[in-house]
Image (cartoon, rainbow, N blue to C red; front, side, top):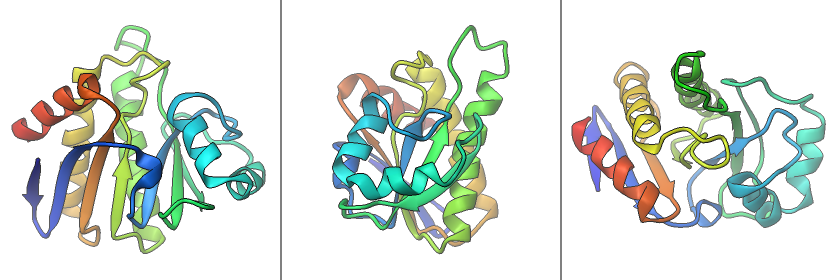
Length: 175
């Protein structure tokens, strides 16, 4: 499913983000940027040691920020690493920090000439963010960004499994 926002497209798909043929994929990383579980581990494994080598030089990443590296052996050219918030109860700045992940990733993408980008469901795995809430924040933030920042042609949300895809599809329909 997809929608047009100005000259850009936002779409939702089920799949494996490490196989995306886009300019950049986004990694739901931890603050060290040195690999971990879930999407982070899958990206580091698929991309090979070049990603870890570059990440070691970046000095970590704060929650809500984003940094860029090579994509190593993956089809994408870049990986944009962003650190989502650990969900507590939604009253400790989590929505703002999650929105910042998407916004900062898109800013980094634009600064590096990225035209096509794929996102996972940031903070929805071990960080425990409720998927419907995270999906609504993701869609709203990306839509608002694209309305005011031309230059990115396609934003894909590549989701692993129906349990994540369904809420993101619903959020896209509302957008």
